[in-house]
Length: 141
Image (cartoon, rainbow, N blue to C red):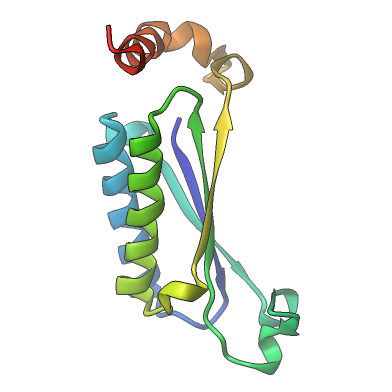
């Protein structure tokens, strides 16, 4: 279920850099969430420079590098896991793409298990045991 999207500017990064970012982000997502990597989806959406503003200026008129990412996780993931992902994805963008850390933005979109499907089946049904185990761990039982 974990899904991550990096928003990048076309032509700012070599294809090999983007590939490395996608692969390392996939591994980090699976590691932090302790889930099989086959559940993870990571992609890069590249935007034309004239379709992206940073600081009120079109990127086509300046070469600022300021990637944005967002990821979806089921509600119930711990604050620690979410913070590790925010920091880890930021580190990857800085280390692999060379973006200034202060320019990188990222966010989390939590989704209720009853509002997400996997193969047409609600995650609340398909992953019920996992969700209950996370709730018990969060409550310290």
